[in-house]
Amino acid sequence: MRRLLAAAALAFGLAFSGAPFAATEHSHDRSAPAQELRLNNGQKWATDDPLRRGMSEIHSALAASLPRIHKGQIKKSEFSALADQLQAQVDFIVTNCKLPEDADFQLHIVLTEVLEGIAAMKAEADQTHGLLADLEALNAYGDHFDQPGWTTLKD
Image 1 (cartoon, rainbow, N blue to C red):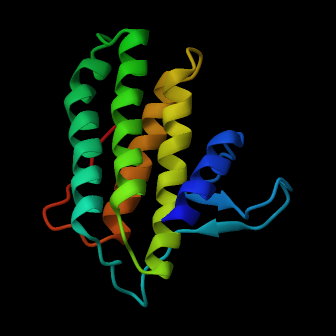
Image 2 (image 1 turned 180 degrees about the vertical axis):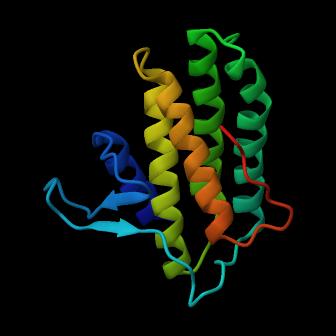
């Protein structure tokens, strides 16, 4: 997970690439090939309890906010507070999750997208885009990681 933490910190500092579920190689060269989220030989990746707990908290926070966001009732400062909630869960996952290397690499791709969404939610000009990026990342997580009871979030 130390590699995940370092890679996530690096990805957090990079500009949003716009490519869905892609993270650049560990280089500052923007022409580096993208990594795409994939299944484990046709199966979802195994998860551990800290990952399931952290991702469930992120899912719950976003799901609870969606009705107010759809009604235009969420303030800019609330986007930032939501981003802080999500960041705390990403930090929890990075600190506590212990996955095999291949699964960890795939999780890195998802968490990179979540971190980029968090950054956009903290920037006043692009908060809704950040929320949508996080929704897409969570839905991709559910498509690629084995978490019983996971549901897709609609934007």
